[in-house]
Image (tube, helix red, strand yellow):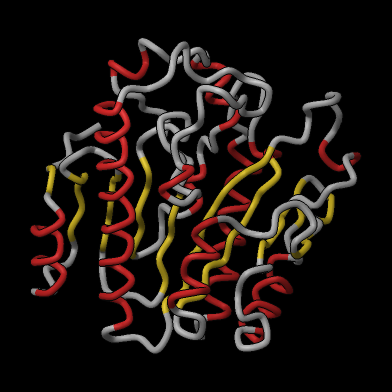
Length: 280
């Protein structure tokens, strides 16, 4: 894998303003990998694809790598790899959760997450402050790119890709589990304003078939959307549409992390087709 160049936010902003496409790299604090091939009205995002934890935090983290992987969203970066503009988070949500507001982005020492004790002790002020610097860097990059898109496009559509575990209680074939394979969280957005786009997107996704099984697509059945959805629904209610997409982890073994490449390829292909359909 090639070494990617590191850029400050100011350098990225300058390259965007000068239309220096294509561009790719990582942010100065290592929070995100970005790839901007050409200007587009869509942006692919994988907030929980990352698994990195800086060494000083790893030393006080109680959650094993295997446990972290299970609650992260591995391989979701692949869903947006063909987007002309994409931002991929590199750090684990167990260090800081980008889909929560800044006040709640660091999991508490006193509260378990998914039944897991995250920290061996309370974090120091210095540890918290550096973590928040990383959190801010990612979100400032995202805001910068959205502003850039809105400079030439009437709306910016963010494809915010996540995944969820379905075998917590028991191991079963995915098609025997009653929950949808794809959930779109729209609870916070201006649903009426964006109805044509949302309805067309859902309809297109519902055409997906995997191993002769029809993929079930639902709206707000599993998750209503997270912080990203709420944030931009509040600040840009009619110009930024965040499509918070949750995939059931049928594209991998959620216990071992093993990837099911054929299933993943089908889901990625049909996400791109749905994206292109609503952008016509």
